[in-house]
Image (cartoon, rainbow, N blue to C red; front, side):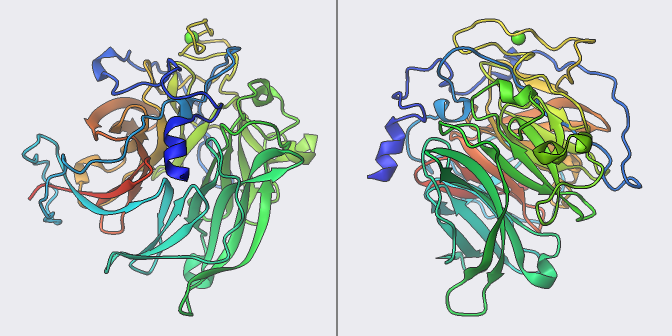
Length: 445
Ligand SMILES: [Ca+2]
């Protein structure tokens, strides 16, 4: 059975429990405060894309560690800790629920190893990916989900499979969606991004005209650190993709490939004009920032700055402000250490690497990033929310201009894979589990 297999075998083939990274809840107080760096405000093309940010990683010569997968905690979800209240939904005062949290949690459904979700503009529907390759269209009015046909064949192994799903900037006009997955090639694997038209006119929804528009180059062995998160610039002109270093370390510092990078592309997947290494040609022209390890969260703030969450090695998980052309240090600098404890130089001023705005040690394993702009929780407007995998938590990060500081960390009792803001301002999260819950967070009544 596929599900039970994944509960006991890690991406690297090792059974769970043998890796020091397999952490449970991480104590907030144990974390050191983040360090700040002076940042230059970056304006690009009339300010449409204002900033970039990134993540840092570090290196490790130790043979194992997939930060993501190795931190997995086996076990199906339990709903025992979920208050049954139905949210009131309109009041924004920061009241607390009986359990002390400033939100109540409602279970909306369960999905098999869900990875990403996307609310579809102009409708009461959403798309949810399951890592094994299924794409589901959920009617949020009825709670009913149907499988979308025409999805790509994916390599479902390790951390790989079907990944992100995002409606394109022109979705309201043309139903274009962008998705990422892992494909095989030459005995190796690599992430790709494709786009297609979501056709819901018939009885069965389907993707029409699916075409791959971007690939990780080169494909390499292994099944970790694909990243393959998708985000669009606020002006809708550019496609940003995070591309993990595939647990190969040094590619992140090598500008001749697109691993360990954040890419800035046109909507058709070609390199966007004005990228910092455009003069080098080839895939180098895609690169926006580099020195990344495993960026699983990308989000623009209201002022157009790009923030990213990056999975570090042992410790050293990061929130970064992404700036074009900047080097975020992996595998040469990290506030964490190698698996097994070997040192990696910490970020320090003058080392040539962008330091994180916030870092966690021990790890919380950031698997997603969302910046809140809704009405239901007005006290959190402009703040970032991180879904923590090994941390089994929802984490709030205060954003203030180009600075960030740790806010709240709420124990959710399960690995959190995805965090999104719904059109009504409620916060929806997906658990990372063989039977992962879709949860809705709303203010207490
Ligand atoms: Ca270090």
